[in-house]
Image 1 (tube, one colour):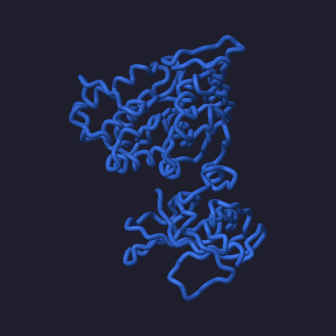
Image 2 (cartoon, helix red, strand yellow; image 1 turned 60 degrees about the vertical axis):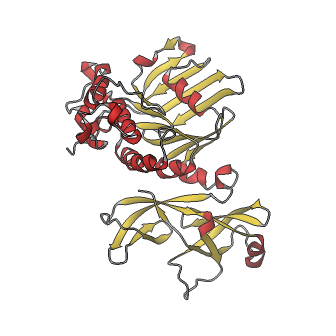
Image 3 (cartoon, rainbow, N blue to C red; image 1 turned 45 degrees about the vertical axis):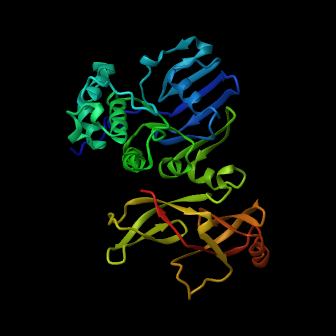
Length: 374
C-alpha cells in the first residue's frame, strides 16, 4: 500500500492553531497565547511541571481553561466570549497518551477500526483510513494480534494508527516515548519521523527530551512555569544564546540539507546546505535530492581564523560570529552564521581571547561530528 495517510489526504481549512488559555493549578497558572502553524511537528518543550500536558489537555477539552479560546484549522472549539464550548468528543482531534490504553479484548484491527466510528459519513475520505494508517505505521503483520502480545513500541504504533483513523484536524501526543525503554524508543522514532514527513496536519508533541525534539520538531514552544518563554522554528530556538537550550554540554544546532551524493564504499554522504557542504558517515544509501536533517553538537565545533588543510576534519565552513556568552567557568558558547545557517561552538575562554572572538569576526568552523536525524 502506497496511498498517503488519511490525515495527510484530508482537506485542510486555512489557518493553523490559535489558542488563548488560562487555567489555574496549585503550583502555577497556565497562561498562554499560541499562534501555531497548520502542519508539522510542534514541540511543547520544557522541564517537568511547566504546563506542557496541561496545555495539551486544555486544547483537547479534557480540562476547561477559563477564560479560553481555541480555534483549529478554521473551526472554533472554544470561545468563552461567544459562549462556544465543544466537548472533547466533538473536536476533530486524535490523542496519544504515554500509555497506549488499547482495548485488550479487541485485535489490532478492531482497535484501529473503532476510531472510524467517530468520523461522520460526510467527512469520510474516498480512500480507506484504516489501510492508510496501517501502511504508514508498519502494522500489516500485527492486525490479528491482541494487545497483550505486543511490545511497548508496537502498542504505541497501534495507538497512533487508531488516533489517525479518526481523521483528525490535529494530532496531540503526550510524551509517547516516556514509558518505553531505550530499545523500544529507537524502534518507534523512525515511525514518528515518517509521520513528520507525511502528515498535512499539525502534531502537538509534548516532551522534555531534547534529543526527541531535535529529531522531530519543525516548530517549538518553550514553556516555563505555565507561560510561553519563546515560540518559533526549532532551528532558531535551539540556537538562541538567551535560551537554556543553547547551554551546557548537550547544546546543538539543527541543519536542513539536501543529499548531493553517497559513496557506498566509504559510507559517506555529502549534503548541500545554505552554508556549503557537509560530509556525514552513513551506512544507508538515500536518494539524491532527498531532504535530510542533521544535528551538530556545539562541543564538536572548533574555530580557526584560517582554513586548515592538513587535518582529519572533513567539514570546514566559513562563518561569522553573531554572539557569545559565558556558558560555564572557563567555557564560552559562540553563535555563528554560516551562510544563513546557525551553528554553535563551545570553546574555552582562552580560545575566545586568543582568537579575538567577537560579533562580526569572520573565521572557519571545523565540524568534527555530524549526526543524521532523518
